[in-house]
Image (tube, rainbow, N blue to C red; front, side):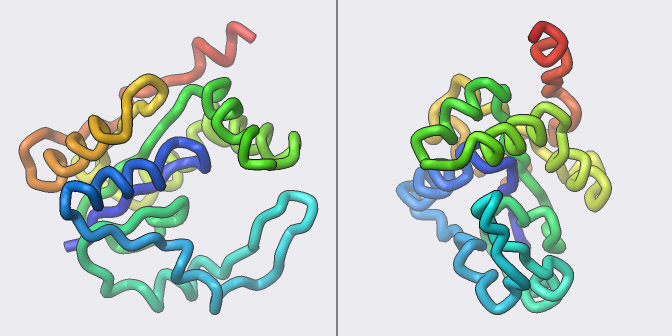
Length: 169
């Protein structure tokens, strides 16, 4: 069984994966698997362009937990989508040295539910669990992920909506 952890950059995937590891959970960092599938590097956005279809084919038999912004392209039994309010997300990305354009692109992607929509296109609602990481720590999110993976809490899909926040800008 594969449990995927996905989300826009800055939503807390790496921190949550580390919290899971501290709990003894083995979590694969999907960034370590993409190198053979990089088609090019987008210098303007500071990001690699990955052949996601070929990458997913090569990694279709993974088991356990896997985290990365493309985890939702894998055949997961359950998938967790980490979310973060766009202004907080932008604040988290700024210290990473991202360009203003990249920070804006990621904040807009989060505001528009891009990762969630891609996930919803590939999975049934009962396979998806959303976590708002805006104001919770990674240990709490990790606890929720394990509980969802073990079937102790139900799926939660469509519960996070940034439209009111976006409309207030």
